[in-house]
Image (cartoon, rainbow, N blue to C red):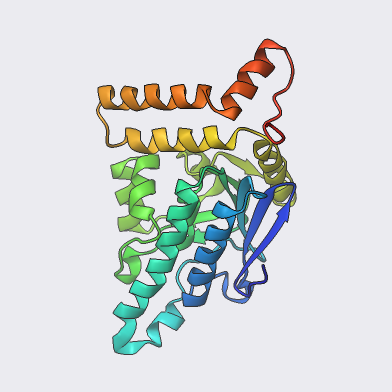
Length: 263
C-alpha cells in the first residue's frame, strides 16, 4: 500500500505504520487521518499481519493536530474537525478492537493527538528524547483521539487533569514512571527493540491476545461477577480453539507452540 501521509510496510508478519509528514512534525490533517483509518482497516483484516507497530518519520512521533490546516477552514472549522476526528477515531477503534497487538515506537515528541495515539497503543516504547504533552487546554481545546478515555485509565483522574490543566510536559523517564510507556530505549535502538518484540508477538496466539484485550477493556465497566462470567466464557472458548489446543499440546509435549502454522 502506497500512501503519502501514512506509510505501511510488512515484515515478518509485522505491519509497520509510519506517520509520514516529517516536515511538520507528523501533524495530523484530514488526509493523514483518512489514510490512518484505511491502514488500520488493512492491518486488522490482512491475515499476513499479526502484530502492528506505529512510529513517526523523522525525529518526532506526532505534534498533534495540524492547526494551520484547521484554521484555514474559517467558519467551517467545526465540520472539518468532525471529519478529521471521525477518521482518526475509527482508526483507533480498529487498532483497539483488532486481535493483533498494537505497539507504539515513540521516537520523539508526542503532543495532543500524538499523545492520545501513544496512550491508545497496547504497549508503548519510547526513545530517551521523547516528550509527552496533552497541549489541548492551552489553546482552548479538549482532547480527542481517545485521550480522554485512555489517559485517565493509565495515570488516574487527578494526574490526567493535571496534565490537561497545566499543559505539563513529561520526559521519557516520567512517562515511564507514570505508566504511559512500558520502556525507555536509547534512540538508536528503539526500532530494533520494538521490532524484535513485535516479531515474537506475531508468532504468538493472536486470537488469545485479542480476547485478553477484550477482557481488560470490559473490566472497566463490569462488576466482579459479570467480569468473571466473561472470563469463564472466553477461557472455555479459547481452550477449544485451534490456538488453545496447540498451546496445551505443546505444553504437555514440552515443546514450543507453533501458532503461526497451526492447523
